[in-house]
Image (cartoon, rainbow, N blue to C red; front, side):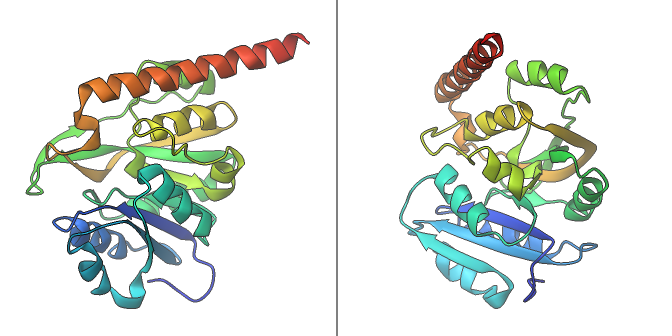
Length: 244
């Protein structure tokens, strides 16, 4: 589905050693329909398993960027910087898009051009792809209330998001220094400058297999706390600037 002209949507897939799931992941993107054109950019972040060989099976339908291991945030930044579409998404290499995901979000974003991004609810599946339950993500249309709600904990699944590329670049992208929580940090920084939207439909299958990065509660708590501390410092800085 990748075309010679500029695509409408670019989907970035960062991957490191996910030979078990990467084919299903990429195939779920290529199976999307109802959109004008699509670009799929896979950033292979130093895989040493069969991932590169599996990716070759997709041929010219995807663009593969290979780099030395640099982490998920750095891989996503590189993919988004090279993306050619005005709207960008990412998909974790062990997850899969539900049918119609990109079409629904593209129609929503083009109808609401002031939004920097939108996110959706999602299904949780096990390592075999069997659906376990559905998460109905919270939302508030008031930006300040949504920001306060998000400070209570990150409820936006990154693979459910569609963003305007210009907004992503404007706020400086993801912070590679954050091993975890780089997505949480991004949502808060976006909300400090832009409105974001929401589709209540579950349009992602998020795979929980026990080896997920977010499975470490100690690291989760540490990086979430660090992200919230950074947000507090930004608010204090803005308040000081308003008084001057």
